[in-house]
Image: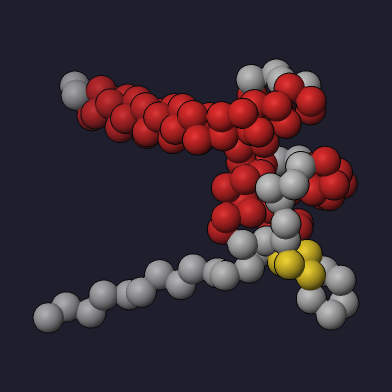
Length: 112
């Protein structure tokens, strides 16, 4: 049986790592934390925020609504309050279609 390396997944991410994932300032992440109830990172004894995978998914959802779709903060709050599951489903669909598009583009480049 061949050796298979295990991928180590972090449990907690620092605010700088989360900001880098979305290419935004850490201050924006802190601001969204105060504005949206769905972002609730744990804080250690020093007061440093520790974001879980769920928190990052919620930040991704807010980023999608505010930055990519152009919603106002109030509009994003209303959308999340009324139908957050539909928003998550649409976002997942967009991610899946983007991956399929990338795969097809790679295939196209390989054809002479």
